[in-house]
Every structure is written in structure tokens, then in C-alpha cells.
Length: 134
Image: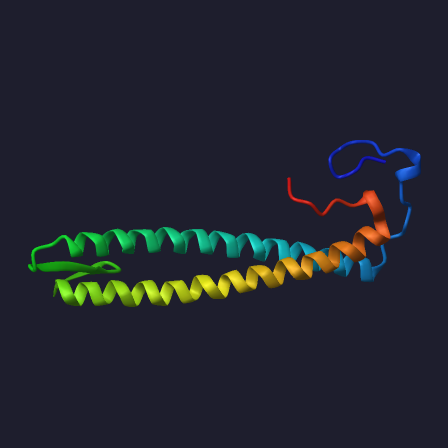
């Protein structure tokens, strides 16, 4: 019987356990958690890139000479003082960092749930099931 990597298992490693509805539900739950895990990691990566851009903008503002600057919000641009722009950047960093922290907590919860499901599913199916990332 081929395993998830396409390799044939030795006869002793095969597990002919029938997949029950309960097992299939756990497999589906694991898959849903895995999809959400990838979404969370992608969101965190995007937010970290945004935080870097905001940090770069803050650095540029610090090197300014007190002039008014153009601040971009979405598609709109408006004029602001350097102090207003700096305050805006600080607020955005704080707001986005809170989101990153919440997503990191969610990632940890997902990994914990996946570990519990792996233990159950590997206990039932052994090497006949592969729940690992490549």
C-alpha cells in the first residue's frame, strides 16, 4: 500500500484499519486547521512587511526638517505636519502589532490542536497516514 509520500510500506507497517466517520471528521478538522494555519502565517508575514514599511516611513520623518508631508491613507493623500504623521505611524504600528500578537496566539492554538489530532490519528492509522508538511 503506498504511503503519502508515494512509497510502498512493508507488510508489517500496513494498517488496514477502516476509516470510520469519527476518523474522517478528525482528518477533516486537521485539514481545516492546516488551511487556517497557512492563512494565519500569510497574514502575519504581510503585517510584518507593513510594519517594516511604517518603520521606514517613521525613520524618514525623523530625518525631515519640520516641513509638511503628504500622508497616504488607502487611495487618498492629505497634507499633515511631521508630528501628525509620526503620531499616525506610531498608532498604526501599535494597532498592527496587536493584530500580529493575536494571530500568533491563534497559530499556537492551532498547532496545539493539530498535535492532539496527530496523536489520535497516528495512533489509529500508524504510518498509513501522513499529516506532516513537506
